[in-house]
Image (tube, rainbow, N blue to C red; front, side, top):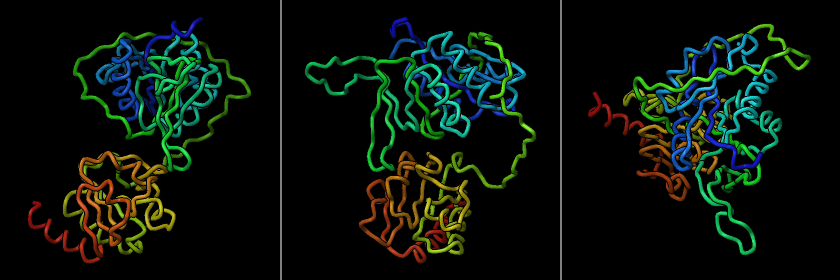
Length: 345
């Protein structure tokens, strides 16, 4: 089969406990853009047990079709049956592009599926677009059109690489949660539903889940916050985060942090922003005592407004900030909190 016979943009619609993950909607939003450039359709692949009731929600967020793989063996995520399910869908329906969320599940599933269908996988993409490859024409080398150009940080975030997969299909990528934007849901939208089951025969690769222990956390998901007050190593100590919390409380925000803060044990990993943390898009992002290394800015540079407070006027954070204040955060932040309390009710 030639590459031209592969059609459509497919999204692995991750669900856990019969609830769709936000990354599924984010990927559908990007898939709609890619499909428009290719004049093709968007298909969501829904894998699980008793999950048919989720198809309408996928349609509302952009899916033209939903392929449902429903089987008791798929009740909880396990590598072997899920990899078999998604690889079988790819082999059967021949998609041109397959997008998977770079979640704990997606990071396990994506590489295994790409190996089974003999194609490449670009991990942790931050930008996806349709274009020519090579991007700049090279004399004597064919420039292929309508390729998926997959951009991701490389070499520890110190450079950006754009990667293509021109000679194999599907073109596969994993995408970090929070990077792509979901569309506004279309109320009442319907998708064509296709039920497909390749058959599941448990073998010695099917692990047995003995027990599932769910950790209950009071920590707010920073990816949903509209205002983030984020602190870095410059805050100085865990105790000093109290002044950031006071600022956040005054304006209805949430406290977050950089990796250095987590490494020092001042704040939990769930609150970390950056390449090895979470990607956020709040309306307002306060970067307080954060130098602005590329590993951190990669996770917050799409914020609507960025306010930086740092005593070092050469800190890289000022390069991405909309507003910058140079000075001692221990003096500036309490004063800022005091003034904001006067105008915020």
